[in-house]
Image (tube, rainbow, N blue to C red):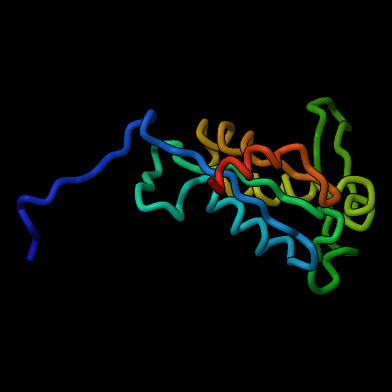
Length: 146
C-alpha cells in the first residue's frame, strides 16, 4: 500500500556535510578499491543520496604503490591515451604504469566508475591519492573525527 502522505526528501546543496575518509590500499585489489572509493565520492553510502546532487565525501588513498592487480592483468592490461593529433595515441602497459605512477592507475580506475557528466568532474577533485602512507590531510581527517 502506498502512503499518500509520504514526501520525497531532496537534499539542498548547502545541507551536504562532507566528511574525510582515509583508505589504505596496501594489498587491496585495484577494481574493488576503486568501486568502494567511487561510491564514497558519489555519496551512495549516505542516507541523503540523490544522483543529481553532489553529496559525496573526500577520500584520501594511501599506499597506492602497494595496490594489487589479480590474474595476469599486470602484463595484459594497457592504459590508452590520445593527444588529439593524428598518430597521437600512446599505449602504456600496467606493469610500467604501476612502477612509474600507481596514483594515476587508481585515479583512472575510479574515474571510469563515476558517471559521465558534470558531477563527475567535481567528484573526482575530492579524490586524493598518495604513493606512500604520508599525506598532508591529517588535519582534515583529525578534525572530522571530533
